[in-house]
Amino acid sequence: MYKMVLCALLGICLSAFWCPQAEAMVVISEIYYDHPGDDEGHEFVELYNNSDEVVDLTHWEIQWAGNEFAQRGVEISGTIAPHGYFLIGGDFTLADFGVEPDMIYNFDFQNGGSATDGIRLYDGIEYYDTILYDSPNANTLPGDLGWGGATFAPDVTQGHSLAREKVFRDTDEMNDFIELTTPQPDNSSVQKPKGSAQIPENATVISLAGGMAGMNLVHKLWRF
Image 1 (spheres, rainbow, N blue to C red):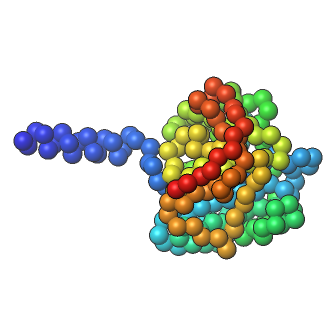
Image 2 (image 1 turned 180 degrees about the vertical axis):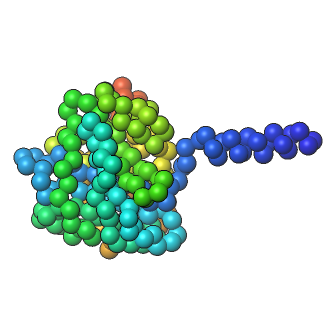
Image 3 (image 1 turned 90 degrees about the vertical axis):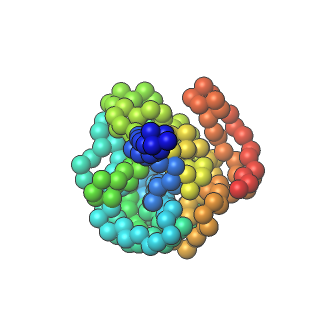
């Protein structure tokens, strides 16, 4: 009996240590990195707070990579409400999408096309949330599961975005993300209860069919 209990407890501890977390506190929920024409001023990163508490984003950073992640990224200023959004976008984000960023910054993200690029959120201490897109990962960019990244999100078509399919779930795998033909950024004026969908009903998306085996244009009706 005691051995069974000990083994069960050991299994729980090992599972907690080795298995990716299904939920994370603050995650990247959508990125827009490849605008038709000149990218400057059009790119954005949307964050979502999975917790039940306000999170102070002071000293958190957005970092991005082509050959490697910069040691210092763009420092964020502001707070994010429980189950709320925080939008960091360029000078033209409001004109492009009708949504006012909570913080203005003109990013210079890599556009993919020949090798893996990345964008990640860093809390300034130890926590990362990373999106790696396109392949191959010739520069061995690290994902949240370690060096080299286990999977990669697709390199989206110009004018499309990469969005987390379910904001409340983070497996640290890149198949958490799907390609949106119409970007859907949200700012701090939007709050969604836990368990709600990131993607609007009847949104047109491009998703991975069978992992990296192929990409299909699909129309999905999200029900959660």
